[in-house]
Image 1 (tube, rainbow, N blue to C red):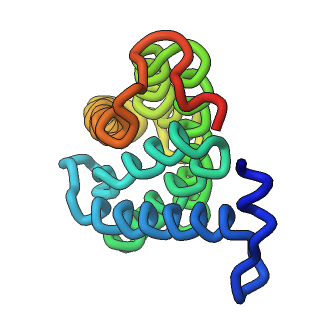
Image 2 (cartoon, rainbow, N blue to C red):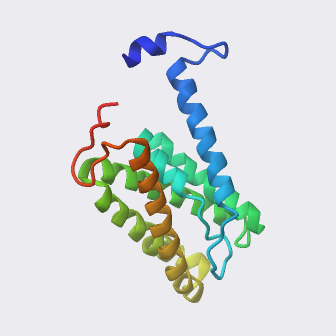
Length: 180
C-alpha cells in the first residue's frame, strides 16, 4: 500500500507519503517551539516542555522523527538567549535528538514504559553528566533535578499523545503499528 501511494507525486516532486511526513514533522516542530515557552525553573533557564513532540515523533515515525527534539531544544535555547553559548546548545540539541531516538527505539522493541525510563535516565542524568567538562560539576549537578523532572513530564506527554493517536499502542511488547 505504501509503495503504491508513494508513486503519486506532488507538485514539488516529493511522493505523497513523504509530503505527509514532512507536514506532520513541521507541525511537531511548531508544537516544540510553543512548548519552549513553558519553562521549568532551572539554573540555566532552557529546561522546558519542548521535547515531547520529538519523543512523540520518534515513537510514531521512527528515527527521522527524533530530529524534532533537536529543533525543540534549539527553540528553547533561542527563547532564553542561548545562555550557554550557541555551540554548547547545539551539542545539547544533538543529545536531545539521541535521547528521543533511544526512547523510540526502546519503546518499539521493549515497550513504552521501559522506553520512558531509558529516556528519563538519558535526558535527566547521563546528558548533563556528559557535559560536565564544559558545564563544571556544580552546574551539572544542579541540573539533574530540573532535567529529570522535565524529561519525565515530556515523556509522559508524548506517551499520552501517542496513546490518543494510536489507541492500540501497547505498554509492553510490540505495538500494532510496528509494521507501518
